[in-house]
Length: 193
Image (tube, rainbow, N blue to C red; front, side, top):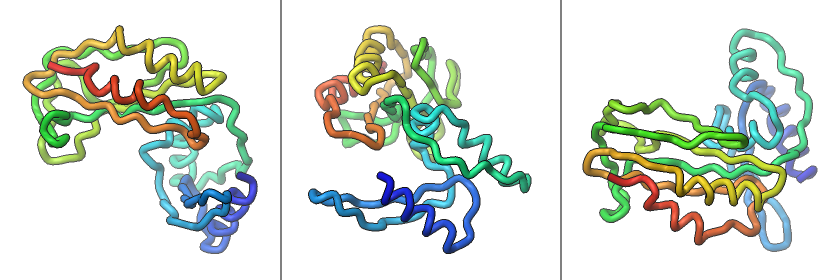
């Protein structure tokens, strides 16, 4: 992790980049890493970083846009987070997008539960854009606790969304050796009409 961090900083310094961004690497079975790409923007997965280091990346990006220098401080992850992407897709029809009106919508909440979305009851999902309509993030002291929070939310989720279903694609945080795949697969049917 330290070597990858140093390589990412070196890449950003080389091009004189300042702002929120992500440098991605591929890691082989021998833990050698290889540069893949640099994204000079906030990524869709940014809530995971914000949750595990308790730092607002969007605020920092806005400060940069106004010419306010960022601290440049290195943060070390202290928590574990899991993100589920909620998509308006038909899981029984090759995950095709399913635009339509959301009649009723109830999202879970609670300690260690974060929801990033723009949808609401009565919102009409347009057919012109990406099908992701929300991100549900759980955060806890351990990976197991974060995973348990996702699993426990399953019984509390209800949604009536016209004639399409929402699929949930679960992606793990940076340190992902033991993702509970069974739970991820079961979550595919929690939101449905």
